[in-house]
Image 1: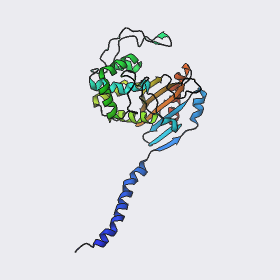
Image 2 (image 1 turned 120 degrees about the vertical axis):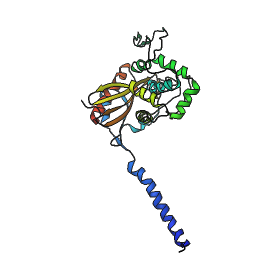
Image 3 (image 1 turned 135 degrees about the vertical axis):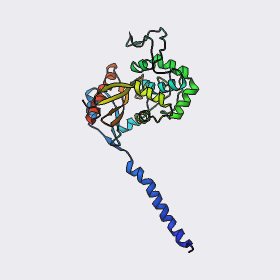
Length: 289
């Protein structure tokens, strides 16, 4: 029996419409929900700080946020870039593993005008992550080199991919920028072994990013502090510093990824990053006693 050309032509639009509907259904069904938390503003106000917190609850596929506009705004990553820098160091052979010792160059580094003992000694990738040792990660970036660093940045799609400003400065005072939302995207890929780096490198960085291990949860995290990087300069006054706290919590078969940033107007503001984030993660049930 011959097919009827007229019937076949008439049915095509219906089949195409049905196919397009099926293709769009998963996107509509599984699109993550963004839930604003204006009540979190009180916790920020009580510490005298201004900023944003973004938390992705993987199981619920929900983004919890204070100030969604700011959470999408890119800032200098500062020392949160050490997570990426460590991956590059491992896969370029800048260090053989997270335990290889890099000798201190003898230059005394200080914080607040006082020598910081944890920086002024030999370091490894792990200790440099724990104490956020700037000189170590600058040395590792120099060993990787501009071309290889740019290649890894491009392959991973990190932030705005701009590493102008010097191979050992681009994440501290140069042109690299990343938003809280992009930070979480990077962290999710790191947690799932989905970055373009070797599984060995990703596993090592997951290990050295653990800052707290409790019976009911494990916390991976990194702080960051960027000088005059808050993008709020006005009336001839320089911008405030930017403070970051990013990471993820694993516990009871669930994961929560977070990225918070604040304007650091006074030096003591920086101390609010970790306790404030933990306070709000507890409210979400991510940190359980």
